Length: 354
Image (cartoon, rainbow, N blue to C red):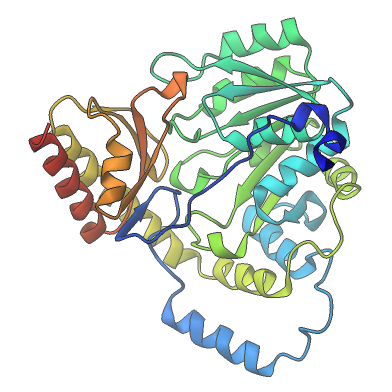
């Protein structure tokens, strides 16, 4: 009975879903393999014991966190907005600009939430293909933009799940030719040497999104942020829900920002481990490895249902069954050495049984 009241365009819509199952090794969600350091855990436990404000709504402006982020990136506090993960900010931005049947341009394959948020906000997702090696083609993006005249353009660099990045020079070419709002998702930016944050003064349509879910290991606390010019941030705030980011998440995010050296070291270790894993994968026959600038590797394997078979062994990787753009592809997050060794052993056993 209630189904007749559902929006017609959502009746057969598939939402973003992520399995939460028992596992031995979890390498399917691009999370950091590192938890909070012990010293920080002690500090936070003491803060919880002494805190008397859990009965009070959180700071709706995330003032302290925005101040720390502004110092971190050498921008002004007014250039920063915080959200419950960067995907909440994607939704807020689309709410701000999208009217019914407006077009939103985005790469494919890429992060599923771009398409989902567009549909939820009554827009039309307009995807442009990456090259065969999953690299960006700047000229094609500009050509596609001029043909479509979209309301918003979304770019992800390094791109998820393919790992390719768009060089800063190429990004500037896009920005020189695109007039609509441009969302640049840098969720994996800490694993890449380049950012376009310094371009916000030059391009007033540029919005950069980042997250604490990857290198900072706060995926469970859902902290994301956006950086743009102050006018753009003021406009996005119109659509941001009040009290969106809880008090504890704000406090922890502030603390990790003050430990820059620790997270730089962890980032270096993750990328060193990535090199080790790539070399081990190269030794396994018929596995194709795509170039990645992030904390994950995309591979193509001839083994049927590789992800499902590894899951039976308690090893989780991200598979893309049924996706024409990612046929037989699997995304592997970089774990600790012992986790990566279990993965390699599991894959070799499957190959031996083929």
